[in-house]
Image (cartoon, rainbow, N blue to C red; front, side):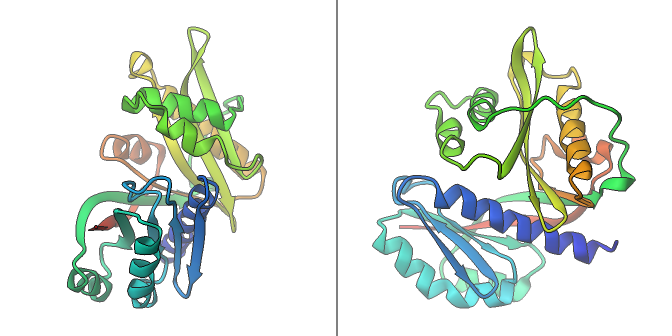
Length: 248
């Protein structure tokens, strides 16, 4: 499979995750237009990750900037963004002309599942509340924001996995199965359990189960810290995922 197919699956799955997160985070709304999926979450007016558009087809997506600006203003959202492939130069120019700037950039990665050595890990399921709690501990969120984000999502759409350490959930991951792809997200390990290979184990659980359920590829958005883990598992770099942000 060529990287073009993986890239398309990466952005399609990322858009679906955005719709899930935004559509169930309080009185939110999802906007679907040609080449674009966006979420509007008035209860999180300063969150450009919940209030964001995913440019699945960049040149088409950026034609809807005026509508996006209007919808976010109407919802009294102060910070919103657009996720864009860093190689989409025309779309990037349009965003810059609209007064938007890049505030974050992360590697987009993917691979064919059959190319990975997933081992024979026994899958341990995790509910969304647990995944959120472990992520909040991992990122030092004392307000429980990620638990609140994940808890309202419908059961059965996202597949959660965990690895325990000293009898407590210590590493977690989520998988969204969409069009033959396992989109991995919310991978985290609590600080006291790091450097023990737990994140690798929970990833292998998620990928084994995805293969059993018919997924042929896996994609994800990595952090700078996580990129080494995913490279060691066999993922390869596909693009840079940029968050262009508009404030006020």
